[in-house]
Length: 320
Length: 267
Ligand SMILES: Cc1cc2nc3c(=O)[nH]c(=O)nc-3n(C[C@H](O)[C@H](O)[C@H](O)COP(=O)(O)OP(=O)(O)OC[C@H]3O[C@@H](n4cnc5c(N)ncnc54)[C@H](O)[C@@H]3O)c2cc1C
Ligand SMILES: Nc1ncnc2c1ncn2[C@@H]1O[C@H](COP(=O)(O)O)[C@@H](O)[C@H]1O
Image 1: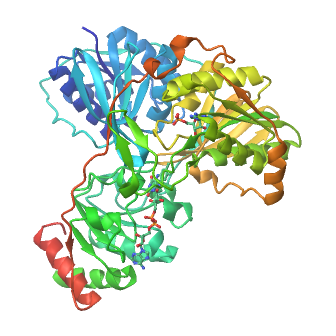
Image 2: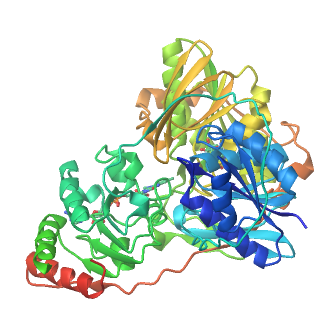
Image 3: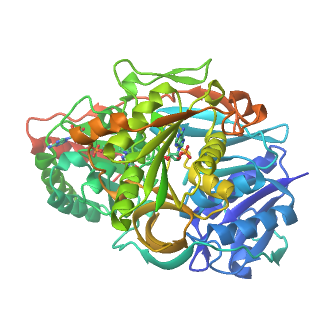
């Protein structure tokens, strides 16, 4: 029976969190009657071993770097060769810089479709059905595929990685594939990161256009630091140049699922919600009681943030 | 340099959730009363990118292509008013409710029919279905490379240098023309059409091509032949259990909030 291939991205030789989420999604399909789970990774046997322990039945290795952002053409050659070798009719990858390019590129090369940014998958009679959000998060669509190969990118953090099982075993082999890389990558520049990474933070404090002033992010950063968290922003704030795009939360930014998300002067447009509605607890600080963010929050303070944020910093200091 | 820009007309993506409605049986979005459709927000940025490249090159022709209902003429007119030279509307009952994959096929055929194209500029995604696949598709179908999610771009002869936005930073890439590039919001604000330009645009030609004009077979178009069949469309439910933190002063509100967060072990 044809199986599932996942594209396992890595960073610094270690599996990226999304790679383990993909394995969890693929194992869930296997439990619904799907075939074996294979993984394609760019790295060494140790990386292969990690993927096996987290749910892969077999791992195919391609040289380090060939699944990096910007190298979709190289990645497509490896992924297409692996799909054949592994006999997979489902191919899953993350909604990442690589996945956004690789999924449609592979799809058009195979004459099939790719469903982007999926948040749920089910298998019926061996065929995939995916749920994805559309219209900026206002609607959900359920889709199937006409073509034989079913390609999907998965929304980040929509699946929980499985605990590693050292008892699992499976083959780790090299895959040979060369593809013409017409797009020449000259330089890749990582965004400046200080403190806790937004995607990993337990607490996120985000600011929006309603701050009215880029300097206001200083207080949000102070609050985030006190809570051991990270600072994010709405796209409106990023587009105004108030905060770097790498800290943007939402449909076209980061997906975060912290324990606590504090939204300061953010209205809660569906495209922003798309990146943070998985937060366990939302606090809204907004002077508009009808703002969507207030409606979806667990706690809300309807007041000028300029009065609340400094007072909240002081109040938290006094708690300890 | 000859450039084709692809623009799509979509329901306003900033339609408030309260006015957003879906016909679940027909699996379609019901247009919100009094909210006019707009040009997909990334697409005027693609037009802007084309105009800047043409200005820098000092020559060339910019053709705007839109696939859609007759109302999609407005999206084309908008690009013409920004300064593009001519338009093509791909319009056919067989194009109703097709997906981004079928759209890419039609766009690629149209670009071949236009001919002599050095660069295709598109938006990073259409903000109705939020797919972001047509740029890779058009490139693959035309047999040229794609560079996606561009923030800025310069041309030197037949080489294009593009700065891309990544999840965690930026990337500089180079590609030889012909190529497809998709533009992201980080590119910056597109120019606003001036009255004189709007009047000039009225005189520019917009051709209309059908599926047959593009040489598309019946089996390639139509909702029934979607590559990604739509099985269901609905509005997800969101619950509201908000507790509004009251108080006589901001200090009191802040103090109550801090206590509640501590009680819930959130801080
Ligand atoms: C295709 C597409 C993709 C998008 N992707 C994203 C995305 O990834 N992320 C994203 O965030 N957005 C995204 N957007 C934009 C989104 O639609 C909204 O426009 C944006 O999120 C609004 O940002 P905001 O909430 O900061 O600003 P606004 O909507 O302007 O809200 C400002 C809020 O601040 C409040 N406020 C004002 N002053 C004060 C004060 N003194 N004290 C307290 N509250 C105050 C107001 O009541 C209001 O609720 C996207 C849009 C499109 C079309
Ligand atoms: N119907 C259409 N007409 C013209 N261009 C389109 C159409 N659909 C998609 N595009 C182009 O393809 C980009 C990405 O669309 P998509 O892959 O559908 O998200 C858009 O920003 C447009 O530039």
